[in-house]
Image 1 (cartoon, one colour):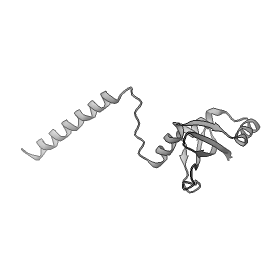
Image 2: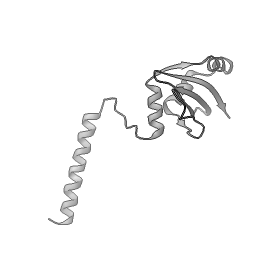
Image 3: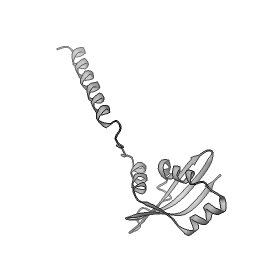
Image 4: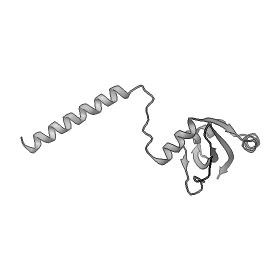
Amino acid sequence: MTLIQRIGYYLGGFSLGLMLLAFFLSGKKTSCSYGLDARVIKNINTKQIVYSDSAKSIINEKQLDTIILNHVLRKGDVDFSKSETTTKPCKTYYLDGTLNKKSIALIVKNCEETATIQDIQILD
C-alpha cells in the first residue's frame, strides 16, 4: 500500500467520522467548554442569577438594558487577574464585555447555588 493510499484511507475515515458526529450532535444542546473562561461562564449561567441592591441601583440610575448584562454573562471574558478565585465558599469573578459599543464589567460572586452580580461598572 503506497503512502497516497494510506493518506486517502485516513482522510476518508476522518471525514466519515466528522459527518457522523455532525449528524448525531446536530440539534442537541452540546457544547465544548474546554477553555477556562468558557467553563467559568458556563458554571455561572447554570445557576440562578441574583442582583445585589447596589447592582439594582446602578441599573436604575444608569438606565441599563438587561440585554447588555445578559450578553456579558453569556459571551463575556473573565479577567482572572482581577478575580478572586481562592476565596471560600464563594469565588468572585470579573467579567467584561461589549455590546453595541457599550463596554460593561460585572463583578459576580459565584456560590454553590446562586451567582450574585455584586457590582456593575461602565467602561468607557
